[in-house]
Each structure stands twice: as C-alpha cells, then as structure tokens.
Image (cartoon, rainbow, N blue to C red; front, side, top):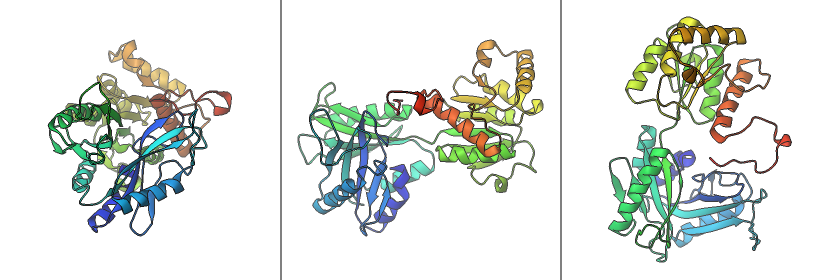
Length: 373
C-alpha cells in the first residue's frame, strides 16, 4: 500500500471510496510481492499494480465490484494442477488478491498510518481476509510497538493478532496468518493479512563524490532512506545529492558512532564507503566492522588500495572475522566504468545478497527465477 498511499489519501480526504486490491499471498513464481496494491479511484483512474500487467484488467473490474457492493472479496488468479482459472498469470504462478472498498468510514486510521510511515515509525495493518462469518471479513487492527487501534471482532482475536503482528513488524515481514474463528492458535477458519510498514532500510554513503551521487539515485530506487556524509562542507551539499534524504557534514566515523549509539543502525542498514582515502575510510570502517548488527559494509578502491586498507585495519586491531564482513572491492563484476555503471554494480550486489542470487546470467541458470526471502 505504501506505493499508492498518496493517491489513496487524495480519495480518502475528499470523502470518496476507492477500490483497493492487494496481493496477500503468492504461490510459486509471481511478479509482485505480498503487499503490492492497486487502487481504482471514483473517476476510474488507476494507481499501482498487482501483477505487472497479467491480470490487471480483471482486478480492475474486481475493485469496482467491491465498491459497488460494499463487500470485500478474496480472489485467486493463476493456474493450479486441477483448475484453469478464467484469468491466469503468464508466469505460471498463483496470487491471492484481497479487494475492498476503502474510505473514511471503512478505514478511519489511514491518515495516522500515513503519518507514521512519513515519520519512519513502524506500524502494521492486520486485516481479516477470510472468516466463516462474512461480516468479519474486512475488519482491521492497526498495530504499533506500544499500542493497537481497532478490533477484529473479539478480545481473544485482537490479543493473538496484536502479539503476532508485532513480531512480524520487528522482522519487517508481510504475510497471512491463520487462526480459529475466534483467534484460536493452531486452528483454521480465520485468515489475517498483516502488512508491515517498517521504516525504510537505510543506506549510509560516506564520501561526497560523483559515485556517491549515482549510488544515491540507485539506492532511492531500491527503497533505501539515503544519507550522504562527508567532512568537507564544500562537497557535502544537498544540491549535489538531490536523491539523498539527507546530507550530513561531519567526520564519517563520528557520525556513524553517533548513529549506532542512537540505535539507528540495524541488520537492514547498508554502509557504503566511497572515499578511498585512508584518513576517512579507515576510521569509519573501524566503527562499522565492530557494529553488532549491520546488513552490508562495502568499500570502494582498487586491489592495491584494498591491500593497503586491509593492512591498516589489521594494524588498528581488527580481526580476520571482522574483516570478513567487508565487501571490498565493492559491487559485482559487471565491467562497470562510469559512476552510474558502478552504482548499478553496487545495487546488484545488494540485491544478490538479499535474495541469495549468484550474479550469473539467467540464461545460464535453471529453476525458479524469483527466490524466496
């Protein structure tokens, strides 16, 4: 929903009702992940996508139908071993779509959720997508780290889903949970889709150079919240890094240490050191490689620079285990030369690490294209 939130809020604030279709479950290969959404505004305009084009027309009609009827609906699209559905995915996968009418009446907390997302506050939305009682379908619970708003119909269900949603939110996971009709664990009958809106992962880019500008653009496309940091005020200016969320003038090692002390670095954070200058990169890497939780630490430089940097870090007391956490030289071997090409190679390495990709051409591989997280 995050991708279509602005368009949805426009309809919501105007007092209208939008048809919102959300991917809640995927089976085998699927073009979009759970949480991907498409909205149909009252004027018929569309924002977002649930399948990359395969079933968009059918989902468009479904979104209009639920607005007209006022009743949410769970629909499956794809081809299984036993049934050929009227509308299928060309990739051979299956997706479950939950379509619902959304307005101020059906979703009064929407503005609060938008405010939380904008302020990087974690929030999860738990929606009943299947239940023996049709009146329960569409009920939702908004769950934060310390509070919950709304109800799924019973105190037992609210307590169970709140507890589980907080666990999913902490892990940044979006998925469907199953319970008994009254929220009984290890039973079936009620399905709840939990959409986790965790803060965007961070990318900290150290070194206000042309490669940093290109990387900031790539990182923004991948959904990172980007910070560019450099001790030189003449280079570290917002005008030079329009794709960055913030530009900080400070010694990199001091800034990183401060961020770690504030709890702003986690297992999803990517740290990219692009200065290839020992007086900048060695101190910041000493801090980075000793952090207990960080998703990725990469540093730019030639093979000779890498050897010299490694020797300096060893002299500073870093162990082999700590140095093994370092991606150096940074990026995948794409033959990149320009800043833009180098940024693509760094982004490619981040994607490969996230999903377990090998970086080989798909024509040289077999099996599923999309990997499970």
